[in-house]
Image (spheres, rainbow, N blue to C red):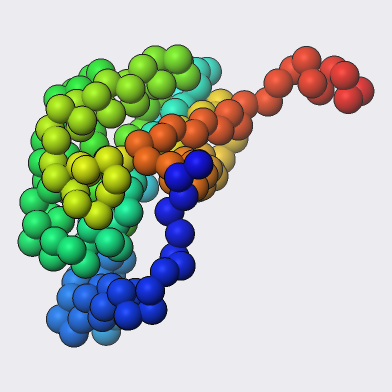
Amino acid sequence: MNKVTMSGNDGFWARVRSVLGRSGAEPAYGVSAVGNPQKKARPAQRIDEELRRGWVEAGQRHVSLCVLAMELDRYPEYFAAYGRDEVEHSLDRLLETIQPLMPRESVHCLRQGRSGFVLVLPDMPVLMARELASRIAKAIRQENLPNKESHAGQVTLSMGLAVTNPQGGFDRGVLHNANQAVKRAQRRGLARLEVTDMRAKPEKRKKAA
């Protein structure tokens, strides 16, 4: 099993921390700069808006809501080896690769954090969401963006898919579960997909009663 860990040579990780924490570096995407109230957290706000919209749409139509989170594998090593400009170029390429695969024009691939993306997919069955994830993974492989720090030899994304049936007030838990699923996928290796089904299962409730 391939795992992304934070162990290893102390000198290497010191350099990584130095690069990531370098003076003048921008904060993570979606996080406002400390002491600068004019710097808005636009990416995080967009995700929140899309999530709220998807929640309402799925709830009104009594259909499921899927959230697909994606994260660049071995990001600290990749950043340390290639630098911010190259990493941003690769993330832009990934965004350009993913967006045309969206099932509807209303679905957008949004940046999340320093090295991730998120899709909010209302009224999409889990099997279709898994198929979309597979097509995204294939398209990324075909881009073949080099990453010498990965044994895959190229940039890969791990993915976490969470599905729920929206009821009642807005709940960000579906996004949290998608992000947790990404972490599980990365512990298993590279370019993996983990799925979390948050929907209640009537048959289990009956057995419990």
